[in-house]
Image 1 (spheres, rainbow, N blue to C red):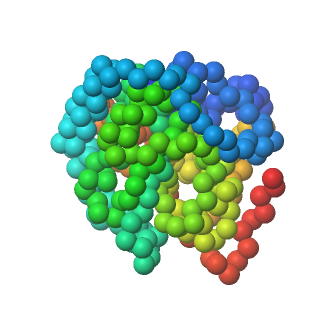
Image 2: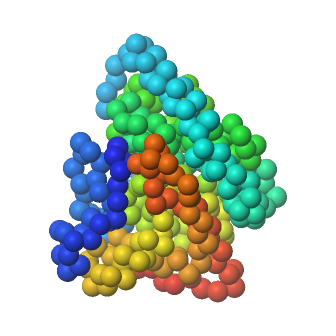
Length: 277
């Protein structure tokens, strides 16, 4: 997730250099990965690059997270978000759960919860969802920039830090919520490709960037090479039911703007569009 607000922007439809699907994180170099580079990414063991445990940093970060959880928990935004789940969204959640009682949550691209507020708010929302909804199971979290301090604090709040860089290629063999606000298009693309069959798609709930907006922007720049990073996003739109998160106040705009729930319902008797690898 971004450390600051990330938006879909288009400057010149004929130049890949001028199209930014999602702005890179502050303090990190933006990736200009091609389609081939994305598809060749392999899962690999991961651990924080730093190794020093700093108890004072941990205590400070825990306090920051506790304040953030309290703040968002009493906000009008969270009340509206929870109401949306209990009404409009739960029908689709129930369909995905089927006979299962729990749905695990996977958070990709969380960003630095120590350095920036939006990741703190996004993690707080996930923790509040687990607190308030019995069907939320374990929360697994990953971002390659996480520090030792951040991983220890995540674990203190009941989250599991993934020790493999999956590059978003987790197959949904059982009901799984992928919580990915403001991740790069390539990560959504990888996730969809890893689940490009009717059953895994039906097991997925995705909370992240609006696919409808990706489609709208793509329609304006039909010949842009950057569309290679969105091919699965665009192909899945015909099987997607999208529900936008609304009533986002200024306090939470940077963390949750242009976010939607996505549910996928491909007919099991039809062939999905062929996606080239």
